Image 1: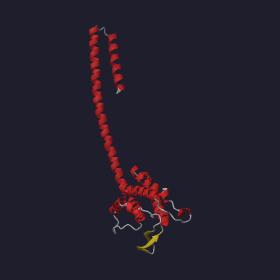
Image 2: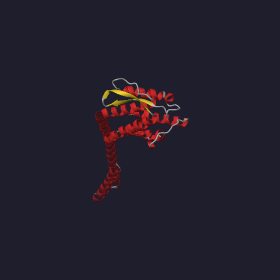
Image 3: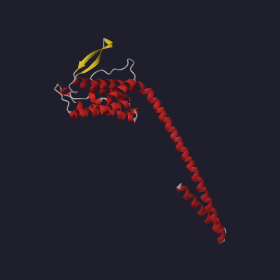
Image 4: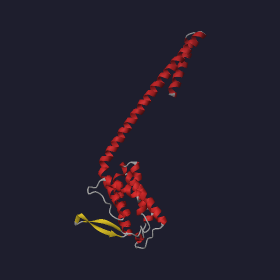
Length: 244
């Protein structure tokens, strides 16, 4: 716009000067022509300014429309490509998380539904104070282990806290996250990345470090400070699962 204004004004001045040399104008003629030229220049500039604004608004509207189309298409692709995999990631991590905190398998419907896990996680977060108590890190955990020979009927087993924490809670969740990120990181939204990385960061917290990680088992007390940290990390994990 500035370039157009300068060009128009320069052209008007050159025309006035050129005609002044060719035609012997009186002062009144020169003044009248100058006023007319300036008026025309102003009219052109106003017209161009209005048209330019209209074009910019149309371009902005078109850009927004295309951006929205891209977002809708992205969501469609994301839903189609990641739908089942996200479901698997969410249900597997949720099952381990609920089992770890509740100390027993989560009671869900036979036909696993995402809503069941969501409701169970919300319920757990609301009742966290009654689950994460003194002795939390020494109480064993009841869980179902799938027997390859009897897949339809998993075996109920009682596993020590440290073993469950190391080999199921941390290892299995990290394994699921690693495989998922490796395949789908390029098409994940920023919000999904944050949720997944929050879970990953929480399970790596020092509160979940056990002596077994260093090759031996030893008593693990659960102090008041431990309880606060455990609840904080469990809230982060639960919240991130709900976000996913």
